[in-house]
Length: 340
Image 1 (cartoon, rainbow, N blue to C red):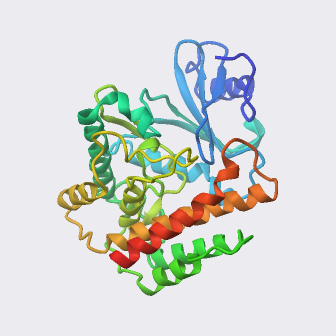
Image 2 (spheres, helix red, strand yellow):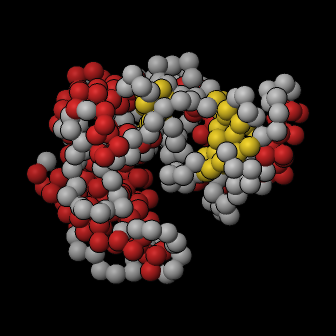
């Protein structure tokens, strides 16, 4: 690890805090590095040379506390620890901004690989890739089988009217990012509103469930589900719809948005839905709506990134090509909804 501390985490301050709160946990000077690839909250690996931990905190300069609520993230991971859902063990939550400049929590480091692209999966071969992705579905079924009341999450969200609120929320996000005409996006939003399905019984949902938000070990088992910042109580089929969207091949060469669906052995979206339905017992006949909603949501997210790029507010590779992806996501959403 580099000796230069990463932005947002002072190892000496963290060491003093841990020595005070958990005496004996740390046995030497701490070094930290930022893990790249996270979309929002910042994730660091911290070591004293003998053991490793993970620290999560909001982005630098964050303003929306509710969007980066460390207490919620810490709470859901802690609640799920003794269930069938694999999550890291949490060690402590700190809501005192004076330690690292923002609230944060510390959890155990878990060995494993987050697979982000088809190219990363390819070395596993078809059989192992298939096993890993089907395991993703099985873990989602386990999550949706958790009784929220039994694990202390009965008040973790407002499931009544969940889909309607989600649709309105992402419509507002779209309105906040309008910098150009986007053919079909308002049509998609309106069509989703007209066809709003009735939700099954609410469950704990992850909110961003996909292959690169889990850690997979050398035996192709999921060791940990990560990135719980979007979790709440709501409609479980929103998680499945998003997983199906991410499991749909996109013919987009050199795209900054990756899908693992083209990896040899990757199950089809239909296979994932069939396995989820068989194992959960839930009716998935309305799933095209949820998948279309996932396409709409990602189109809005990408348009927001493109809009900020046009204003010069984003820096980095690939942002200049995000805008051309948005119509592709809109088209997939419309097609999914129309074909049902």
